[in-house]
Length: 327
Image 1 (cartoon, rainbow, N blue to C red):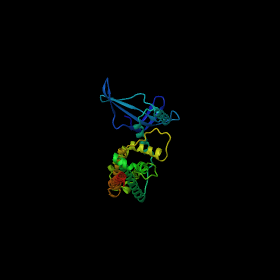
Image 2 (image 1 turned 135 degrees about the horizontal axis):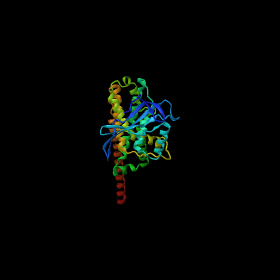
Image 3 (image 1 turned 60 degrees about the horizontal axis):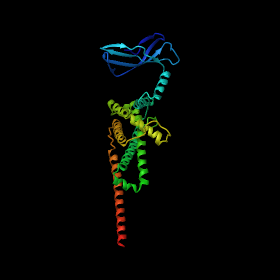
Image 4 (image 1 turned 135 degrees about the vertical axis):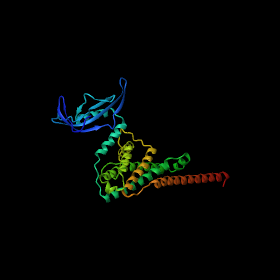
């Protein structure tokens, strides 16, 4: 297997050294008709030429190995290409739909994370942003709870609210959009944003100051939770950027968002925030009260509207009775 620092020579292009090696965590197990199980172990190697063969440098090498019966063999004809050529090939492959949307979304998340600048933060700034983020999460959870409270209606409730549909329809839409806007903002990686990824980046840059009570495993778990939700977050960011901030005439991404996954992500956000607050000052933060009260108050409003409708029906019924009796 190839190692960093090795000196090698290409048959036609001359000598080079190995700078970096990207590997799989374990080889891919393949089933072959002729030999049974074989292990396929591809790599990407960054190399440095004594004399680059072209202006594109050809610094990316894709060697691979095949293991059959415990014997490892080097795969032949591994290409050596440069960044310009690789980028052009990837662009063409993406345009031709070589890859699934899931793959592209995960790739976008990895690239966004890599391009996010390391954030340095003073203690007082971190505390302020932690407090600001808590308040923003509260607003979002309150909105999503109220949105669900006046959206999840049976026929009896819907008929009561329909008497004032010119108010409740815009209110429901506004609550939904505010909830989605705040949830997208939680994961905004723009360096100016007060977001969980940026707070985590600041903590990782100075854990002793900003998270003295957090273990390394706590920060890793938080980072994993953010990564696990990357696909839904990507949809949220698309919806925020192309449907809320402004309305794009044409978009290729799916902007549909179901309440269930959104509500679950809000729950996860609460847990993620609590991890940061515990690591910073041993404070457990819960948003359950806000969620519970949001739905409870929405339910109470609907109950009042149903009672008001029923009283109106009784008044009409009584008036009709009196008319019929000639009063």
